[in-house]
Image (cartoon, rainbow, N blue to C red; front, side, top):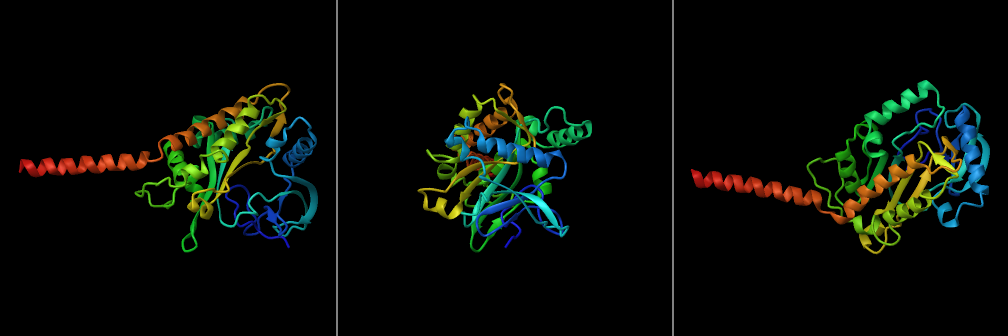
Length: 305
């Protein structure tokens, strides 16, 4: 039985009669193929990647398992439509917190049409892609059984500045994450989600080491998914943190050249996360300093009266 994914945070969604991905109970994610060359290009990437013996096993775990293609009833009611059948990356998580991060300061491949370049460049300029080498495309943060998920609106995310990105990377690993802009994130899960030998930072560094050498593929407009379990993080020993790569409609052959666009964006994300681990209480410290300055001002005012 196919159904709409509960935990999709970015991309085309199968709701309100629109064409989008579906999932089943066996842990498979069925993504409708785009009708232009992007659909065939994504199939070509998965086919090539799956059979390429030069991809190390420890790197394959960062990519969805590819089960082939299948004609399935489309979510928009238009009838049978070809779908990529992939591993559902969050099916084993009960209440996952997820962040989708699009990597690269340039999100279009060479030889794209002029119209497509203009469209992508507009998004890159209006987001943090050009400035930081990555942008947050979507996220959801699980709070508790009572509060459920906090999922910021797409319009808000599209307007993120570099400071917003820094703030939301902190909120992502905080027990008090909310829409309240006055509430400083406590970063209480940072050490077990971002840190440690199996945390998100260690996994990103493993990917970085491979990308510093690999010249097989160039990844344009791909995303890194950051996933963890809030309940596990609360226990403090583990968080089930995972890093996965998704969206491969614009992958080109590397032709012996390192993918500096993707590598540069990944390094930038690594820097932001590393800073959170070294200064997890940055925002709390700022708040305390501001309170201290206010109290000092009122104290001085009272003394002068």
